[in-house]
Length: 394
Ligand code: PLP
Ligand code: TYF
Image 1 (spheres, rainbow, N blue to C red):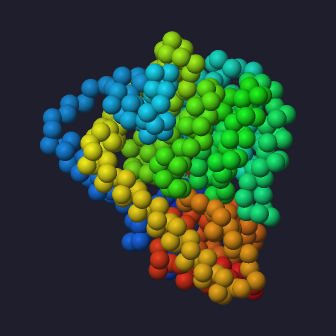
Image 2 (cartoon, rainbow, N blue to C red):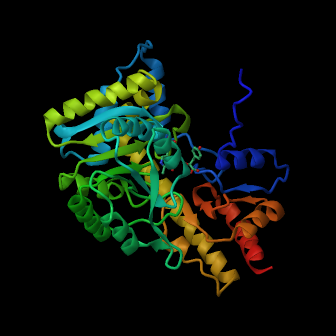
Image 3 (spheres, rainbow, N blue to C red):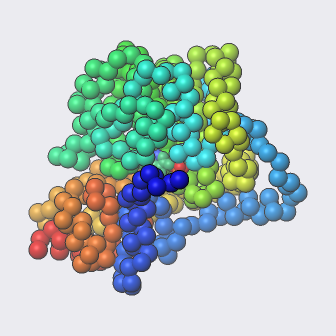
């Protein structure tokens, strides 16, 4: 029956993680997968999350189905976290299975109602953007994004490409902490981009998987809030995987900013229809944990402080690694560590050097040259700097 089924090549990031797990060298360091580890090299259990779980454990919670759109308190809090207090009446929000689930439900919704549109993603982007939008039946193309020379955004090329698109095409934008490059637009560039999107009648789909990992919760949502302020119709896939360190509970949200309350109601119904046809209704536990934290003043303040500490730690690791690399290889160009932000940076190391890092030094990066700085401990900085300088000079 299944003879014709072709083998799945696997996800390159997850395959590399399996290889890392099987590597017997005790000094190995994994900077491949996008997961935040604390200085003890563990996924943290945030104090606010633990406290909310404790509360939930002490109250009686049977396990009914959630509505198709998810837990109401979670939806309201999720919308406010992304958009602030503005426009609540015209934003349709549903709970989703992580940011990936938001992208998938959003993609299905768009394919049903904008069947002719094409989807444009940044070059490069998170690989699964192509998987999810392609899987929903879209033709997926790329727009220029990363400038290897400046380690920043190739903004003029990006704008020209978007200016040439037909009205109604869908543009996927990383709101902050771009994966895989760490290169983000500044506020002035977002303002310019918003005008082009508005003039051309493009439909932006923001992906915000790292809110709070760049400059702050509100700062990282600047682009979304600015576009919404201009009444640009838009979608947002938001994820709590990283900023609540709640990866496996699959917590995210999909938001669609509409013209008015009536349009919001109609869109909301179609989002629920897309959920119904995928998995009927979302899981409850993680959503209850997050709603408990965000609704409670004290837990929320605790969460914001913990998130701030994670952000500071990533910045600290960046500057420590930069200092060591500059000291060991004064002519080298490591400025990318300074100008890029979030979990990732793009080292620009050629693939042979990435392989040498792994095979000779036990330092794992994915072959694009992306490094996950959020997984590096302070004790790991010196060996990683040494290994990088060695593969770059030998
Ligand atoms: N979007 C981007 C850019 C990501 O890097 C990720 C993954 O980490 C996701 C979406 C998916 O997030 P989640 O794990 O919540 O599905
Ligand atoms: O880019 C990353 O490393 C994260 C984590 O199939 C991830 O987004 C990687 C691969 C994958 C799911 C999550």
